[in-house]
Every structure is written in structure tokens, then in C-alpha cells.
Amino acid sequence: MVRMVDLIHKKQTKQALTASEIEAMIKGYTQGTIPDYQMAAFNMAVYFNGMNEEEVTQLTLAMAQSGDQIDLSAIEGIKVDKHSTGGVGDTTTLVVAPLVASCGVPVAKMSGRGLGHTGGTLDKLESIPGFSIEMSQDQFIDLVNQHHLAVAGQTGNLTPADKKLYALRDVTATVQSIPLIASSIMSKKIAAGSDAIVLDVKVGRGAFMKTLDQAEQLAHTMVQIGHLAKRKTLAVISNMDQPLGFAVGNALEVIEAVETLKNQGPKDLTELSVTLAGQMLFLAGAVDSVDQGMTKALEQLENGQALKQFKDFIEAQGGDAHFIEDYSLLGQASYQIPYRAKKSGQLSHWEADLVGEAAMVLGAGRATKEDQIDPQVGLILKAKVGDWVQEGDEIVTIYSNHEDVSEAVNRLDQALEIGGFVEERPLIYELIED
Image (cartoon, rainbow, N blue to C red; front, side, top):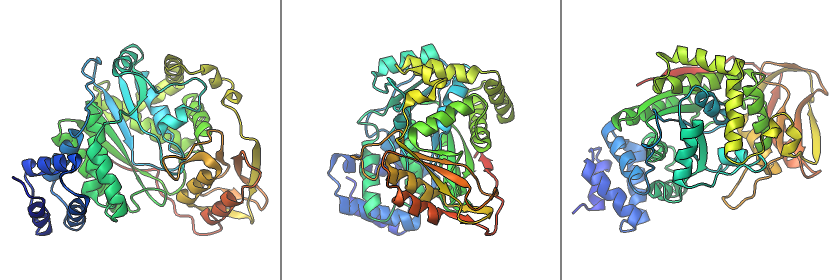
């Protein structure tokens, strides 16, 4: 019989746990036979002493097996999933999924709802009139086989161990542990049933990982877990010092995604989407290299096939695709309030987190799970880091359903710097293969 106190002691003394020990621990914690205080002590030991690759993989698999596991074997072809570690204005899934599907590669996406600055992928899609994410597993599989793409809400019993563990980490200051972050993310991806996984690891002021070293460590750890779990896995490390694109808010981000699919989107959102799509196409065997995949993805933007695929996807899930040509069908916030530059100079800093908070206080995101999202509200940035602005220029348009936007303005005041040192940083730092 495995005693939890012995496992805590092993991690305190930097010993490796066996697969059977990890499996018994996760099973016991999920079933409630191991109390929170012992699991909290274990998490703290991992926080300080880490885990080796084999341990992290076994932890990931045990968490993936703690609840439902989606069987996608009835879907033809290599199923490729994509995950982002989060950011502000990160609309890539809405661009990348139809882009990849337009090449005939099946994208079976299980998504969650967002806590934080704006909604998750489901919330963004639900700002489209009629769009439904509710379906049975059989309907989900049929949609992917017919249209190469479907997005559905996660089952209630996917990785219950992760839900319990994350809540515990959140209140015991053990969230920032690479083994625990990596196993949390990868357990959900593995349980969701895809054959291959592309990971967008964000780094910067608006990201979970603040330094490039941290981001590299997390990316390498997750890619290794994927390989050991027999999933083809690649990662990209991308910059999140400032928001991605110009839109922050649910319906506003949907519009920006459509503009990108029309090949008229922001340069940074287009570049990152094409890179991620290139990786996904490569893992699916549709091309011989990531570079070829990126070239193919760009072609699909330019020839209109990606946009056509998106329209097909929206209609297949009950949405009114007429909004693609008439954005007013998404509705519009009651007030559009200009936020103006207080002095002239070069925009040197956009604190992504604070921009996200400004959108959240308008109603674009959730502080708690119970909060209702207002799909029409948010921000449209008119300038990015490095741009020159004049005093009085409108540099943000605030979309609100309340006349008083002082809370959002306060956060924008803190987020913005004009006239400081402009540090040139790449959008994409590196691609991780192992």
C-alpha cells in the first residue's frame, strides 16, 4: 500500500517516484482518500525540487486517465490540436483552426471558457448569432468527418484530477511550478484525444511565463511529455509583452479573426497564425516541413479557402454566417469612447496585462466563474509599440455598454508609456521540437 507521507518524503529528498506510486496518488486524491493538506505538501515539495521527465509524463497520464478520455479514432486522418498558454487579444484559434481544416486536416477542438481578461474560444464563438457548442460526441465526430472542423465544450468529467489540483495550487502559491503547469496543460490535451499537439507558449509581461528561460523550460517539458506519451508535439515561443493584434474583447476579436482570414488582418496575428498552422500541417503529414506548411497556410489565406472553411464551420454549428460580410449582425456596444494620447512621442510600452484588465472591467472577461460576459464590449488599439503618436490622437477606442469607463481608463493610463526606450523584440522567439 502506498502511503502519501512516504511520497512527500521522497520528493522532499529529491527522489523519483515510480509510475505506480504516481498513479495511486492521483487516484487517491481524485477519489478523496488523500486529503488536501497532504497534496498541498506534495505540491510544495515539487515546487522546490522539481520532477524528472519520466515522472512528469506519468503524472500527466495519471491525470488524463482520472476521468473521461475522448476517443477520436472514428475521425479519418491525423487529428491535430493546438493550445495557447494564454494572452491578451489571442485570437489565433479562430484563424488557425479553419486555416488547417481548409487543407483537409481534421481539427477536433475541445475548448473551455475563459477566466480573466476576455472569454475563451467558446465565449468568442458564442458571440456569433445562433452558434452552438453543445453536441453529443457522435455529432462532434460526424461534424469533423464532414467539415474537417468542429469546436465543442469540454465534457464535465475531463481530467477531474487536474481541476482539483489546480484549485489547490491556486490557494497554496504552487501555480508557478514547471512540472505542475506542464502536466496540467498536457493532461487535458491528451484526454481530448488528438494524435498531435502544437503548443503556443507565451512569454512577456502579459503572459504566465515572464522570462524567456521560463518559457523555454515549459515548452521543452511539454514537448517531451508529448513525445513520451506517443503524441507528435511541437511548440512555438511567442511574445506577449503587448496585446496580439488590435482587438481585445469577444465579438471584436471575432471580427479581427475574420479580417485575418480575408488576408487583411494585423501583421502579428497573421504571422503567428501562419506559423502555428504550418506546424500543425507538418505534424499531420500534409507537408514535408514546417516551412512548407507555412507557405501552404499563406496560400489558403490568399486564395480565400480558409475564409470559405470558416463560413462552412459557422453554418455547420448553427451560426449565422452572414455576419462575415455584415459585422453589425454581431451587435455593437452602446458607447464608443476615444482614449487619447496625453503627449506626443513614440509609443514605447503597452502592458498587455493591464490592457486585458481594462477590457475585463468593461465586461469582456470573468473575474469569477459565475460572471456573465458582455460579448460586444472591449477595446480596439489604434497604435502598437514603436508607433509615433501626437498629443490628442485616438490611440484606443473603448467599446462599452456603460457611459462611465473610468476604471478602464485608469488601467489604460497605467498600461501605456509614450517617449520611453523602445525595445525591439521579435514576435516569435523560437520553434521547439524536442
